[in-house]
Length: 266
Image 1 (cartoon, rainbow, N blue to C red):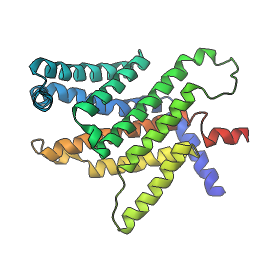
Image 2: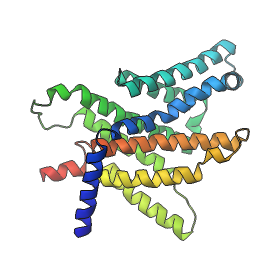
Image 3: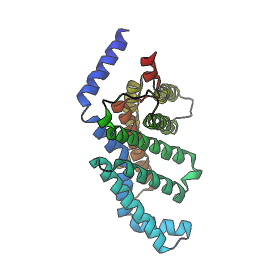
Image 4: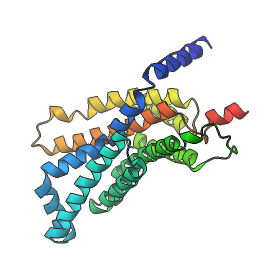
């Protein structure tokens, strides 16, 4: 009991100290993969255009349009999210980019990449829920009917989709460390998904994913001309985006459709 109280007190102090900064850091982390991909479209313009043209036999102009749409859609969406302007439209635009890339790069048939894209969608869903709560803050004094709002279901959907990112990080080998890592990680992500001790579980996962990301996806240690550099960079920024989603859970809480909220009613 003493340890639980100490953990709870530490978490409350952390949230109080970081209250002003945490949502901004969470948003930056969350959109980092779109920002990096948009910049990559600029620097690898001809390679991306040639790939789309060769894969889909769609011609020079359609392939150029695809790359241009990706570049403007992603960088424009990121600017809107970070500046807090038209956030809902920016989120829908980024959802569209995810769907477009899933088809264009044949991610639909690669389970690992598909799960990561769905996890990324979960992070955007949490961002959408946050923007809805900001939009409705003017009605803060008006009593609600106690029913679950679309925003709360968005938060639930976002939390559940973030689970998919974790599943792609599981190591299926028999070493003691891998088994322990899988068990602890699975327990934490289940707590986040159902909304029990949500903020503590999400913050622990953030620290764990940060360590894994820096250790396993250190793309800066691989020369840029090697294919592994791009693979590691892709993994690094996708994981960073999911960390951003988890930080939003820490900052905003699990929402109404969660065990933590239901416990208050009980």
